[in-house]
Amino acid sequence: ATHTTCTKEKLIVRKEFGCLTIAERKAYIKAVKCLIAKPSKLSAAEFPGAKTRYDDFVIVHLQQTLNIHGTASFLTWHRYFTWAYERALREECAYKGAQPYWNWGKYPDLLKSPIFDGTDVSMGSNGDYVKHNGSVVGTADVFVPGGNGGGCVSSGPFKNMTINVGPLAIGTDVPLKPNPQADGLGYNPRCIRRDVTNYFTKSALRVQDIVPLITTPKNISAFQDMMQTDTKAKFGVHSGGHYSIWGDPGGDFFISPGDPAFWLHHGMIDRTWWIWQNLDPAKRVMAIAGKTSLLGDIVLGTLDDPIDLSVIGAALKIKDLVSSTAGLFCYVY
Image (cartoon, rainbow, N blue to C red; front, side, top):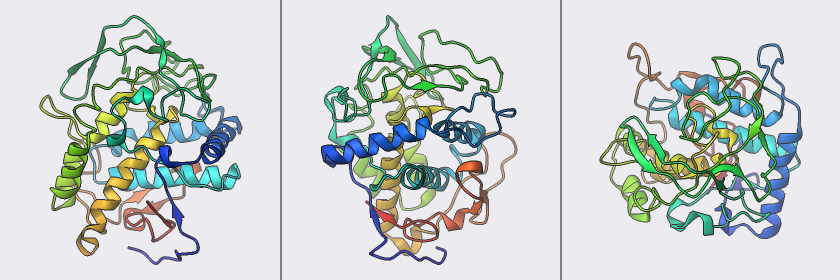
């Protein structure tokens, strides 16, 4: 990868959320709340729904969604995105720690996990129960039965959090307040809803699902495809994690970062890629495959393609973002 100034002294170590001390969890949550309380850096005229610094991250993801999923930039874009969030927590909100991750295979019962148990040191509870049937998910239109939530998150540190943009791709059968703009960027304040279920912890997020993802694919194309599998026969860990949170914005393809649990899920996505890379660094760090967009003509991605995160991260090339200890990055798991 590119030149690095990363040293052992500068290295940040990312930990699993459940392995953090209570004090470390409190510090992380305090920093996230700080970001939610800070004003947006986006133009209010161009982005009327951008009220907070946290909204900036949601909107950057919303605007680039169709170019960063199922594409050559999926892994690098989200590595940069998650790192930019971690940087904002550290530099704008005085956080001393690292971005934690959610080890999917560790928690077969999510609502009993330290992530979703609803305590003040969790990522919050399930949503309140709202009668609903379930949802049709993924490109394969698979029906997933509804869980015991669907309503507003009722306990934990984010019970009063407001999502301001979207919805754009309705991911729940519970009626949602529509956005005043077709592009989803209008101001549309509402609660965070969740329908946390164990449907995917039993079929897509088990240890026996994670290990083959790391050990079987021999090239980046196969690894990406297996990670993002979204078929009637099988869901990959990427979809499985998002669909386990579900609700609004967690189940919305465009604005899923609006749920603070998003960052723990994508921390694990990045960790899984990091482990896979480190099994054969010479061949896997600079590897790239795939197209540049989900839509339109097929244009293959290259290591020189730019990734621009607007007000949360300067434009860089994919080749600058492939290693967790090169370029801007200096972290391990």
